[in-house]
Amino acid sequence: MKITFFTHSTYTLEIHKFLLLVDPFFSDNPILKNDSLLFDKCMNFFKKVDYILLTHAHYDHVLDTEFFAKKFESLVISNYEISNYFENKGLKTYGMNYGSFISFPFGKLKYVWSAHSSVFNDGTYGGNPGGFLLHTDQGNIYLSGDTSLTYEMKLIPKFGNLKISILPIGGIYTMDVEEAIIASDFLQCKKVLGVHYDTFETIQINKKEAKNKFSENKKELFLPKMGETIWI
Ligand code: NI
Ligand code: MN
Image (tube, rainbow, N blue to C red; front, side, top):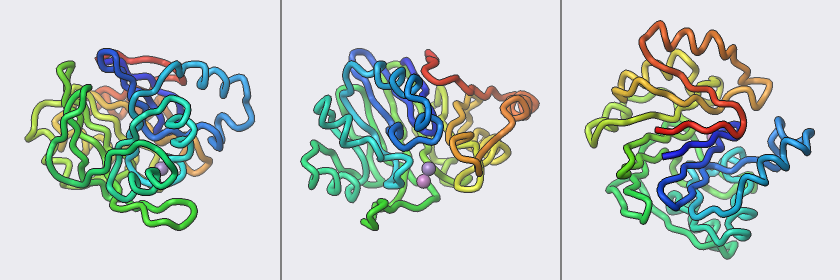
């Protein structure tokens, strides 16, 4: 599986021939807004998008959903309320809720608990926020979405070992670095790809310190640059 990080909580997963885009946030992203070269570089990456996974309805996670879904005829996968919202805008959607694994051509997906909130910018209710547990023949991965540390994470490894977890580390709205280290204990997963940091003034982190804290706890924190790829 190939994971490519952009900024914030936006990344792609490439599993066999399928490209999954998670929480697309480009057009009003403070990092990209005043840098058209960087913005174009991101856009040029996308030759196709088969699926768009949305963790919750906050604008920094759903902002460019319509753009990509219309351009590439992607299937939008999210909770029931978010799926309805985008279905009403003419997109192809698949709505789910907390519960069983659901099979897709790229693997099995389970919408899982996150401790956060979920509302669209226009005030529309965005259902319960969540993350995704993804099982594939190339390994299992947990995408927590925005969340605080929660005991619910202890359930995740009961379904199988994880190769990597993608967790927020910027604090204020989500877990910070210290909480993410405890989360990785709960998840029994030593490899963490950190997201949701540095995008806004309020969530700046010291990357070197963060990586050191992880290695002191015998864990590895990946903080890829924009457009950088990790293979798992
Ligand atoms: Ni959020
Ligand atoms: Mn967020």
